[in-house]
Image 1 (spheres, rainbow, N blue to C red):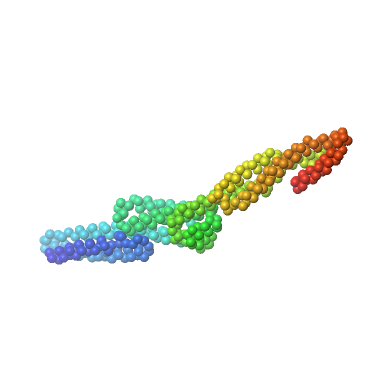
Image 2: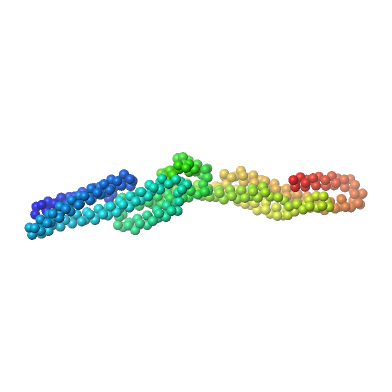
Length: 345
């Protein structure tokens, strides 16, 4: 039947055009406009296949009416299956695009990266499951790439959301990316950071976050040492019969100074992290060394005084036979007691 042969030829030609027109391999970037064009083309092709199907059925009915051999139009079914696959791919691609677009509008301080990372991981699992079925289509592999990029970006952004990140660290990242990054701005959103293509700066981001974390530890330790010595009080034991006081537990003070000096020297050795706090660390180190020296010297002075004081204040023979020396000791003794009074104040 001439009509059937002509229709078959038209159908074969359509199938050949279909492979080029269908949006299996469109674009290097899947975006909203691309998705809209893809669905429009899918609808257009679906309508054409529907029309072909109706016309094919009519021709088969005529062939049956005239007892002619039925012409098989397998191309229609083949194209319909391919179109179904095509729609599945674009359905998932549009789902991914919609999700990512929604994420981009989330205010920075309200982002829960653990949730987004978990959701992105689920998407990656789906893509891996269908890799063999769809990998020949560019729109699918582009979606895979987009999800992979998002996954890596989420990890980096999640690290940047750390409380360890201070203004100076954001300024360093701003200088590196040559974009003004202001996470403290209430209008700062997910997309403000995402659009910077952070993967390009992966090593720098990780380095900044590492520095921020270690500087937080250093600041905490420096504050602890400073607070400890700001609040530190020495133990004084009253000596009523001598009308003065004795400095007690000097060994404990020296041990504590040695411990804190060791910690400070360790921190000062971490050149990559200490720079911002180096002045404070050096000041504390200098102060503690002074405390250490003074405590040791005063302890020696106090021990000597403990030996000499009974000799010059309780022995009448010494006062009589070493009168000049005794008067000198009395002057020094008064000065020593005044020093202790001043130290206690």
